[in-house]
Image (cartoon, rainbow, N blue to C red):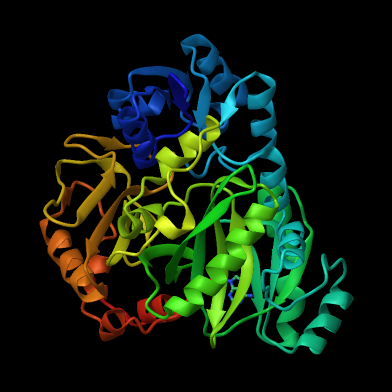
Length: 449
Ligand code: ADP
């Protein structure tokens, strides 16, 4: 086992990793930009290193700064959290070249899954069901138009290098194809340096269902059920739950086995998420994320496992602490994302926290790096915390969420808390009757906050 690990991240996820490491008796090194000198992850880690100015390319994304921080402190392994360098195959290669361990999958797995066309081909070959669509990349507008006619509209044009909801455009009819095709290509080029796109049938009323998988890198893998992340705004998740209200035990076991077998076959190591759209009882693969997800705590709640601990264990060469038969679902869990954003436009709302009070009590978990007086810097993601509740069933989890939101105080900046209060007043949220478009439609109808 490692003696010391470095966390190449900030905010709540840096804290999350520090917590797991501390329980395992592993020393931690935080890295931070000059804008984060007073951040909670810096206070909580055993040691910290300033790695550069506020702009991420010169700090949290800087390979030399992070590798040097390991060398100075004697950290043996790097946990990337999510975002930043977590799915950067080149970084993983450099970490290994320096004799350090990356706590996550191999560079090769990240590369394969990071390119959506290769990912889809790989998954198809491993027996995972995929959304019908083009056979690989679509190079010309004429080809795209012909495919649209063949498949039938609507279709979605996606950048193969895309992520975070960028590089995706829907063509409702043939008349939209030209602008959708050109825009998806341009976004792919601008954001990811790659203008290759592919086309899929656009599913009109699916749910977003993702399967948590975990591999030991030696050909063994398990699944930890699904998360339903259908409540999205601009393809960004805001409310996640496990188990999924629309998924039966039989469906879970079947798709879970397909996913676990697929990652076992490729000797996948660590945590991964296989994302699907689910419509009319069918699962359609859309992409695999080769990292810990923001919403991992809902899975931890219902299975009673610490996924970060398992990540660190397998990275150090130990076995996972569970096998498939040990994993049983207990109750229901919901996470809401607390963003420093102003409604109704969700515009960033950085600034100083004048008062912060975290809710507590049975079945309530808050993962946040906030504290009284903390100044949220304007340079990074607007996620400032996650509120996770766990109940014996979905109704209890919803009641607990309502209670915990009522106890939460975040003063000084605008947050997405009012969104969740309003959602909890909706019947569809209580019946679980929503798909990936529900939230956008609902938001259009809201007039006052
Ligand atoms: P990203 O990597 O940017 O997150 P994904 O491929 O995971 O992109 O898709 C993100 C979201 O976009 C999905 O959760 C879903 O809401 C929507 N989406 C993607 N593909 C389709 C599709 N074929 N039909 C309908 N919606 C889709």
